[in-house]
Amino acid sequence: MIADEQDRTVARLRHELGAMDVHAHVDQVDRMLRRVHTRRREQRQHTVQIVAALAVVLIAVAGAFVVSWRPTEPDLATPAAPVLEWPMRGNLIGDIALHERAEALWRGAGEYGPTGPVRTIYAGNRTDRSAAMVVIAMVAPMDGGRSRVAFVTSAVSIHGVADETKLFLRSVTTVEPGQRAVGFIVAKPASGDEELRGGGAWGFALATPGATAIKLRSSTYDVNLEEEQPIEPDGVLWIVGQSGVAAWNSTVEVAALASIPVRLAPALTDPDVDSVTLTTVGQSTKAIGDVRPGDLIVTPEGLVGVVGADGTIDTRLTGLGSVGTTQIARSAVPGDVVDKAGLPAFVATGPGDVLPGNRVVLANGDLVINLGRIAQDRVTVERMVDPNTVTTAMRVRQR
Image (cartoon, one colour):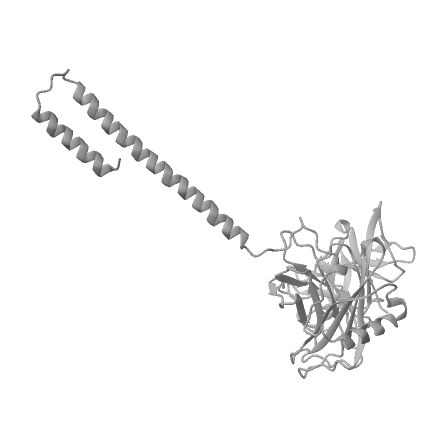
């Protein structure tokens, strides 16, 4: 019974009862009317409950719809697929002759060559006047679930079109299981490359399938470059950076619930870089891995130290004159780092201003490594890396 019908019933009962001689107890009619009103309230409450239940169902359905259509991001709960299983990508995947030439070039590279079957995971080109190039990325299996990835490229052109008839092996790297990206950075031009306008580094990164954004980070930028950069539809990030950007000071991070930095490989014409583990016994720190005296131990942020004759890492910032030139990064003001009351201090040996926040670097040709920043007193060098907190690092060696 709906509300209008209930109201009409109550009115009719009152009218009929008023016109009849009712032989009943005086409160019988009131009890009957109270039951009618009670019944109407119960029906109204029932109707509200039904509407509320329907609203909950509709909200749940709508929420499920939104969740089901939310763009998916790779996360650490689901490990990235092995690089060996990545699909072929790039606008040149149909050029079989290009793949065959690139593989033959890699197989003939001696110690850098593969020892098993090879798959192409990317073949494409960049047509841009800042840095045009052709890149073919190939992968071969190794033991322990690792893979070896090679990048065969054309020479770089600043005229918008790269010559894909002339290829050479640009970089080779080892990829760990679950790694979310592979790539390389070229710090200095190789023979045949055209130097970028204004100088600078360039590179390439390929993200795990399904990734939607990637971060390039380099400690050579005085203002941190940490913005997410859009990935091309085929999962590629083309890197064109300022001078000083290199494999030993830059990483990429693929968007995920918790991002893990991925080290980029150096070009075969750049200083050699390899991963090492640091151990500390008492006051001595040593690097476990392929190290030799004179090697630099670094993190992407800066210098940890220099490997000494006995394999111990000298973590002092003083006495680096035999390794390279100490200077202010952007102004190139030369100087020395000396000990002053137990703290490293920068003493300029040439003209120019030394200001708080300036980066102090160790420079040896294209090898530029951060040491620290000038403190507010314009003298003290605040280290970029605390050697006591580092457990994994990179070994950098001039080839």
